Structures are given as C-alpha cells and as structure tokens.
Length: 264
Image 1 (cartoon, rainbow, N blue to C red):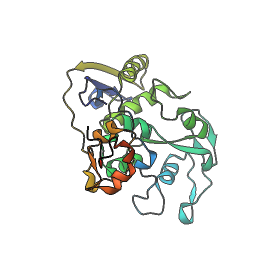
Image 2 (image 1 turned 135 degrees about the vertical axis):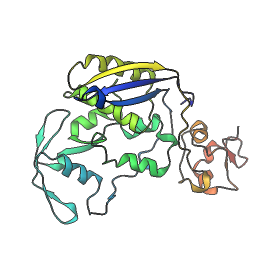
Image 3 (image 1 turned 45 degrees about the horizontal axis):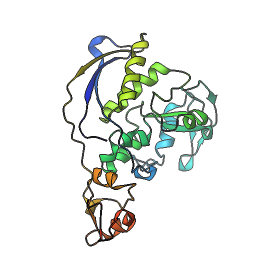
C-alpha cells in the first residue's frame, strides 16, 4: 500500500441524533496493502478482564436478547440470540459466529499491517465499541469472509451496516480503497432515513503516520510473503547474523544467498 494517502473523506454521520450530536469521521483513501497477512497475527479470543469469559463469550452474553445462564468456565446455557444480518433467531450459541465487522484481513490491508501486536490484539477483541464484534449466523459470516461492503452486504440492516463499517474504520484510522470509497459514497447517499444520513466533503489529505512495527529485536518471528511486505513492516534487510530466527523463516527471500534477505 502506498503510504501517500490520496484523499480524505470527511463524514458527518447522523444515527437518529440531532445534528449537534452527530459523529464526525475522516477516512483516508489509499490502495490496499497486499501480502503478509496471517490470522495468527491477531490474537483471539482473550479474557481481558479475567472474569473467566473470553471475548467470544462476552459478545454472546452482551448481545443475547434473552440472557443465558453463565456456568463454570463461562459455559452458557439457555439464552436467545437474533442475528442482525439475516434476522434468524436461535437458542444455540454454537450456531453463531462472532463477526469482526471489519474483517481481520481487511483491517490488515487497510493499515493494521503497520500496527504492533498489542494494537492488533486490541482490535481483534474490541468489546468497548458494540459495533466492532457482532454475533451472527454462521452462514452469513462465512458468506462475508473478508469482503468489504463493495463486495458483500447483509440481507438485512444494510444502512446500519454501512454506518457501522465507517465508524469502525474511522475508530482505528483504517483506510478505504478507491472502489470501497466510491461504493460507500453511493450507498450512504441512498440511506435517506432517520437511521442514517451522511454528508461527504473531500479535502486534501494530510500524511498519516501509522504506529511503527517494532524493530526486529522486539518483533515476533514472522514469515513474509515477499520483500515488499518485509520492508513495509520495517524489518528489511533481514540479516542472518543479527536476527537468525527471522532470517531462517525468510531465507527464501535471500536471492543471492549472502545471509541478508531483502537487501536490494
């Protein structure tokens, strides 16, 4: 992904609120960063408050329309859930996935490639913003995969989904690619209801400096897809003499076999 951001969308998002209470967001438009993503880079699911329930279980408890009973090891019994993507009602927690509204790989392409491991863990387990993680039908989550709204929308609640997508991208300062931005612009304008109304204005982009990835001494060992990804993560060149573990994983990127990968 080019670090030079093309433009910004300044978004005023009204969610059934008076104009004075509207949320204001800015989204940077940039090409997606390609390569280097692995799900393991986003640690799931954690017990952040040490109450015995992990993130998945916390979301299920919070979003149940009829609260389940919580047993040993956070075993959930009873309870009823309503999947907002398709309106399916269920009493089986096992029939639900926890959807990252902005999928992990989409977040990676949009800026998370430059985050620290802690930032990625925080994103993957965000229970502070109720829009970030959603309990939905298995089929809907798997149909969505890692697609952005230009490629996939839920059968129900489209305007809410669009508004929440914008909010989460803005919350984490994630960019939108040009096709995604054009689609969001069109879709937002079509959501002319009391639920969602959005005003777009374009202005010159300011350079956004992401939180740098730790230097090799603090970087978890990771196999990069190519030297472009390694350079974007700030670890190139990868030297066998100073970082043998990282070099061993990425030895295939050392084309001339001189003990230094990605030095060109």
